[in-house]
Length: 387
Length: 86
Image (cartoon, rainbow over all chains, first blue to last red; front, side, top):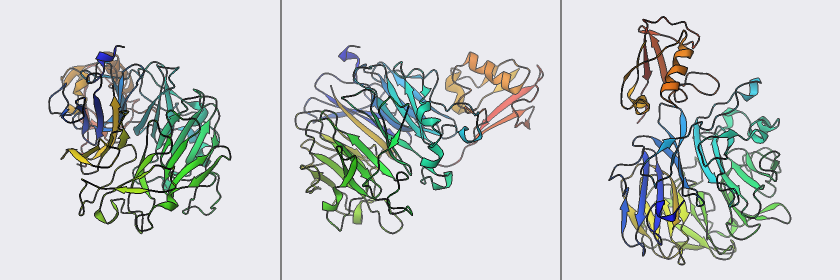
């Protein structure tokens, strides 16, 4: 597909913003100074009134997929091959295998997470769902198949516990990472399930949670049952994986297959609990998080009502608070796990969307923040792309 | 037979609320609707063949919970998407 068929023009940056009431596409000019919204459709969001959990572009084909669900209908995936001008529903959206054994009779409530496949497999996508399910498309999102190696794994009920253990917003399979150096290597995160990885495209799986705290489990050394919130594999440096967990911020020691808590270096009064995590597209030691209040009843809002991004440039050894331009106080919002993203510009742009419908951007790697939009619906996801 | 759709489903029928379909059972009718309007059935019926939580099916104004329910050509089917939340 020609570059010109993708949103925007070469050199420009665009954002796919999934919200509780539709999808917004923001497009910046070459300097990221002027932004317009939904240039193709006017002001109204795509899928007005529908929940859009995640909208993602396949950089190999230019196809955009949107994981959507009207509140009163079943979940589905929409796809656009013309920059969001038109959309067509997947011919067969993600769906679990039909019940053959009593334990396997799940139905997809939400398609929650979308990830394009390896660069050598341009037509491949993966989708994560609630309840926990993993699905694959081999035709750029038109049809979807169950990854039975996970969905029908005999140990799956043990990994995930009972439905009563699911988080308030549902049991979610998220953070699907395809190793940029090995198309067969997948890593996934599951709320109240933990991190698992496969080295054979999802046919077999093993837990990867050693070193992670799980202070809500009776066995602190449990193999699974942990609660990753957002896991990111570095897109260009081998064997670099970070994780924002329910119980802290971690970096994977790949040689030891063990997570190391790097959030202990965060200020104690802020802590290291949060949902999102974003990596620098080229520098493997630079990452950003957005801490939230994880004390007492877990308010899950900006700590003390003072939103702040924290950046580390040394793989978590030290952290710097980045608040210039953000509200100084009385800002009680959260940034959800897929609502923070980085573009690929030389001076990396950072973007996040809030639960109260604001889109914030920094064009100097977090030093100064600007509000791009106000008054959108509750934001679930933000994905940034530079053409 | 005549089938009346809720507004959340009319994007599958080009904006039309009243459509027609055939089938000797409710299940067969919904499959026929899906043949005519691809994708519409999965928004109402999940992969385990259960009617989704907010969908109600009425046959001649009577709530029908079984997809195996028999239909006659002159029956009228009303599909409701129950609204809740904000």
